[in-house]
Amino acid sequence: MERKLELAIELFKNEYDKDRDIERVILLLRNKGLSQIETIKVLIPSLGVNLKEADRLVLNSEAWNDKLKSNLDLRNSFWDKLE
Image (cartoon, rainbow, N blue to C red; front, side):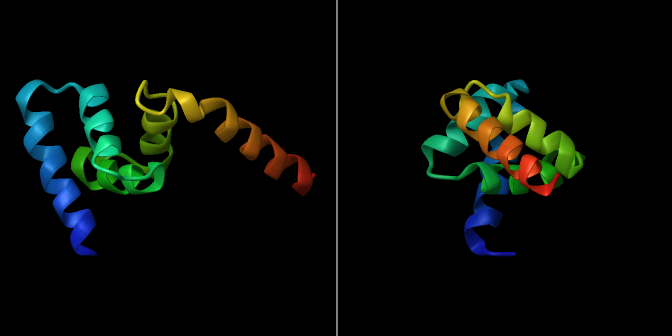
């Protein structure tokens, strides 16, 4: 595992243990420069969730709300191309 991810997991655990506020911690990770994918990679081992659940948490978070429409449009476009 790369060092950046290890540090982000440690940060997540320390911050999440304070108040269990997932929104606050996802925002903190974004403000620290983590991408959505990197944040998902942090949530999976930190919360013990699967990829689908981690993706749902990040996609629908307030921290990434400004990217929600473009993410959904991209995903829909991808699936449309496969049909």
